[in-house]
Length: 387
Image (cartoon, rainbow, N blue to C red; front, side, top):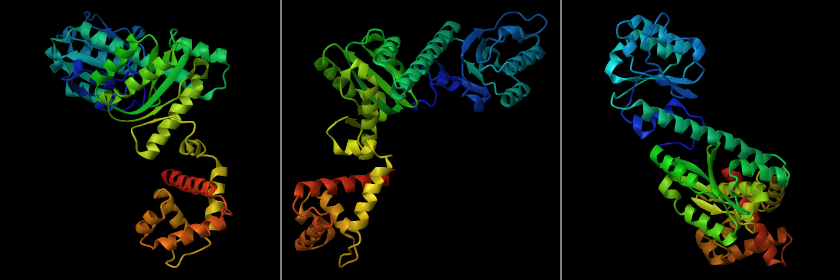
C-alpha cells in the first residue's frame, strides 16, 4: 500500500514500489530507502586508475552497473562504493549476474554509509530502469513544485491577477469555473497511482497534485453544469483508486476564487472526518460546517462554557444534569418520547426538564431559538470531544 505521501520527492522506496522492481532484492543499506533520487547514471566503463571521478557525481545520484569492469579488480569496487558513499549518492542498482562481487565488507560499508544496493534481474534492460526512474523524478517534482503553489493559494493574500497567474502556471488551459476535491487516504498500489496520474495528464482542463499528504483534484470548465457533472462522476471513482479515503468537495466558483475552493474542500474534509463519512460536499448553509470553521476560536468555547455552566447548576433527582437531558433530546431530534425511552425516564419528566432548560436559557417563548441553541451546544461538545 502507498500512503498519501510524506514527501513527494522520488525516493529509493518509491522506486522499489514500482512493478518493474517487484522482484528486486536489497543487498545493503535497507535503513536508507528514504534517500532521494535526483538523477540516474550508468557506470559500466573500464576502470583505469581511480574507480570514478568524483567531479562527475552529485548528491542524490543513482548509479546502474553490471559490475563487469570490477571482475578482475574487486578492490577497486570497494573504492567505487566508498566514493558513492562520500558523494552521498542515493543508491546503486546492480545486475544479479555479478552480485557475488558485493562482499560482506562492502555491505558493511554501505550499511554504515547510507548507500542502498539493489539487485535486479539481468534481463531487465537499463532503458526500462532509466525510463521508470526518470518518469518518477519528473512526476514527484511536478507534485512538489505545484504543491508549494497550492500552499501559496491557501495561505497567502493574493490579488486576482496573482491567483490567475499561479493557476496558469499549474495548467494554462484551466477554464472560467473551478471546483476542487481534496482526498486523504491510501492509494491501492503504485500501478493505480500511475493510472491516476496518466488519466489527469490526458485531461487538459484539470490537474492532480499531491501536497502534504493530501491529494488535490482541480477541475475546471466554462459551464458550471458540466463542471458539476465531471466532479460528481470522478468522486464516484475514488474508491477504485483508494483503499480507504476521506474526501471533501468544494462548491463551484470563478477561477479567481481558487483559494475559496481549497478552503472549502478542506473544511468539508474535516467535517467528513468528524462525521466518520467517506465524503462530504461543502454546504454554506450547514450549521455544523460553520462551527467546524470556528473550532479554533476561543469565543466559541467561552460561549459553550457559560451556557453549560448555567445549565448544570441544576441537578435532577437522579443526579444527572440538565445537559444530559438536552444532549439526549437533541440526538432524538426533539422527540420527548424517544428521549424518555433513551434515558429510562417518564415522558413527563423529560418535558419538565426541557421546560426548565427553556427557563434557564430565557427562551420560554421561542421554541425555534431554543432548538437552535440546543443543537449548537451539542455540536460544540462533539467538536470538543473530537479535538
